[in-house]
Image (cartoon, rainbow, N blue to C red; front, side):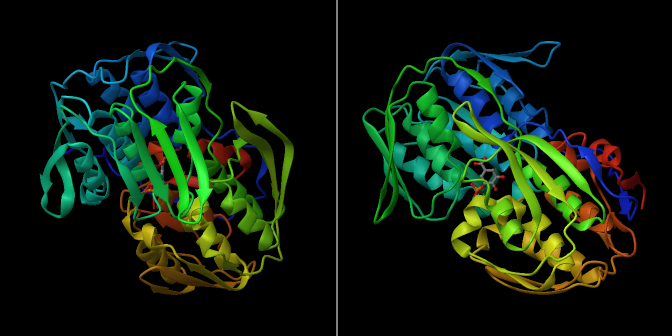
Length: 449
Ligand code: S3P
């Protein structure tokens, strides 16, 4: 099992307004997929704007262990020499995916229909997370999995020698499960079909089409039906990774709650399957504008401008929007604390199986900071106190969860008293440079508790 380094306690407190431009890093979901599909193409894929967070670096390392050439030049351009669909070599070492559920689940899918055996592990957070949601459909292709009780890592996958295509209705709203099945379908003959009742992020489908696979998506009464024709030759691509809306969420939300703020967050990917938070914030009364809306590399992109919004109101977040903002509920719950009245979040059971149980962990930290929170298995309600009225003053545990750490640090920037987290080191998995970026905007954020 991989470990994290020394814990980094961090504290934020009220300072001046947040002003300036926030250049957030590349999209994590797209970065993983660019490396994996690059490794499955024949020839050289060139990637710019790749997120160089630990999660993605772990996926890059895994692709090397499966036989792809993966290099980075001094200017930050990545090159992946792919081995072709079905061309993965058998790893001679354990694949350590660190903190990344996306990394491990997508890679399991990508190798499950090749005649290789691989053993996967991760950190203390990842090794608690459910993998049966991926290994169940992979078994239908003919792959075998042996792991710990409860379908947890460490786990060995024996790839199918003679894979068969699969028709699979994904039982939970999960782009990772959908993507694992599609990546496995790449090396199965015939058509693999995935059906999802609720649409989740579609970067895998878009990128597979870009690499030359035959893939169709149809919205039907039973849900979204995605059909992939197996055993294509994937053509290498040049990919410019857009910036991550899930990372943009932190400077945007901080700007909304810190008086006097005006922050521009340029070049943010606004794929509709990812942009639910921004719609929700606007419904709450946020001063949040999309400037310069355009299309880049098949994904909608805009510059976001967020200004201090003193009159935020709590709302009922439509449950049908959950998949498009699933990673943003922790920071939304912080904004909700600064809004007037309750913010009701339903249909969010998946939050309980992320890097941490995000409902439990956020509820505990918000309560410790003087905010009333109710919660149930798949819902929670944050009772907002209104701008200026959030006490704060608490120390929070981040539970190896980057988004928990960043959310509480955002809270400290506007609460009456400072907020600390016991360990901010997991932030490096998705948003290296968060501390410097927020400090550069004017936040009072420092190491120590
Ligand atoms: C991701 C899918 C989501 C999300 C995760 C990234 C992806 O997880 O929470 O951060 O890149 O496919 P689920 O698939 O478990 O919903």
